[in-house]
Amino acid sequence: MLITEAKPIADKLKALLEPYCERIEIAGSIRREKEIVKDIEIVLIPKNANKLFNVLGLHLLKLKRDFQYIKNGDKYKQFYYMGIKVDLFVAHPDNWGYIFAIRTGSAEYSHNVLASGWVKKGFKGVDGFLTRKGEIIPVKEEIDLFKIIGEEYISPKERELKNV
Figure 1 (spheres, rainbow, N blue to C red):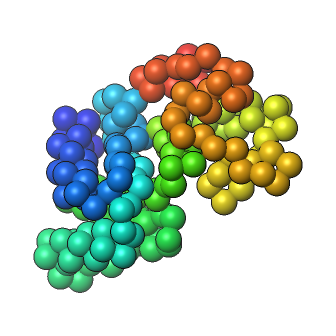
Figure 2: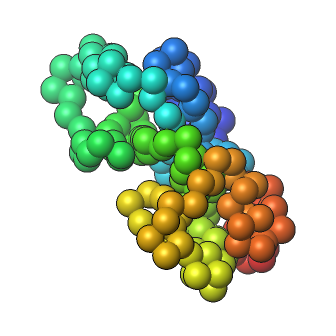
């Protein structure tokens, strides 16, 4: 789908969920401003997860009577919305920056630059958190992850492996 079609859909979904979130942002290829978008990725911190997902579920049922989640975990949900696949990632204030950076991608950039950077520095990714020696390392903002791993911050639009 073209970004000109996908971005308004992502914005509509974000607006629906925003009142139930402490924080919510669109990530993935839309954030990287790619011309072609395969899916919508949204990272959020819910105020009340049960209420948030009840509202989402009811809204999706109204749109499509036989709606069901493709994946329906506590930290990750996947479903189709207005003709495009959506991935919702539930974050926490102490892993927001970590999740947001990874989910902005690209996948190759997240793996080959971010993940290899934290491994070289002795960190691990465990259950959605950055850890070192079994201790959670708070990553409150995306730029914090870059600082922790010793990488210069790169704008989302530039996060393609060929640009590294």
